[in-house]
Length: 329
Image (cartoon, rainbow, N blue to C red; front, side):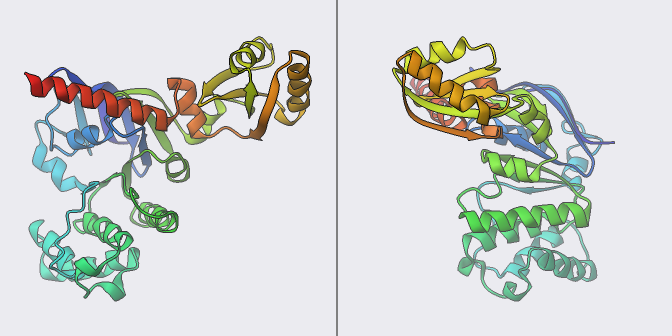
């Protein structure tokens, strides 16, 4: 039933806890997302599950194979597309695919059949004889996905699959991911810090922050934690507005970031006039107000107290300080 089972997995780099006692399961045929800021431990988790890093403690199975005791069986069951490009720019797209399949022991007849299948899937058939150095960033990403599929893997790991791509190309990659999941029946685990990507692609999402999984569920179930609407208000004086709005019994939850107060309420369109009257009575000046449905960004903010962008900045500074300490030893 489960393609991946993770229990108490941790990875320390000296005193830095990159991954801290995480547990989760991925169903067969599912698109599962690890969502979190850069530096949260997503890539480290993927590297452990693909046998490239040895866990400090904990255990995991991929397609029923233990990542420590059955490494070769794990590797034969998976495909991987990492953040950093790993294509040979001196070869054509077809040659890259052929060489990868040859390394996995596929005979010539099967290689030719599979090359055609994966090139059709990512729509690169007409570009297959062009040197990869002449590919665009999006074409390279699609070729890497195709290469990861060459040996018929059961599980495909995609580490930040659309990082650095423009919005249009990113959406095309999303469509390819959905297609290969549906047409190949392959289980997909992807890492991302794009909220809309996780929302669009994943049936199940685990939000990871500072190496820990803070919550997990389907995108809709996570957003339903913040049932209702989100009213965003920029008000002066800010601290007073925060105190006043927080005291309102019909405000389910309240968050703040970058000078904005965000209120979770039922029937937000009816609450806005009420908020304006309360603000006028309390001599609070409303600079702007907006209404929207909850997003995964709101879920992240609810569970961590910061937006994903603010977390990335904080994580970057924390990592810099940690690296400085390590270098001074």
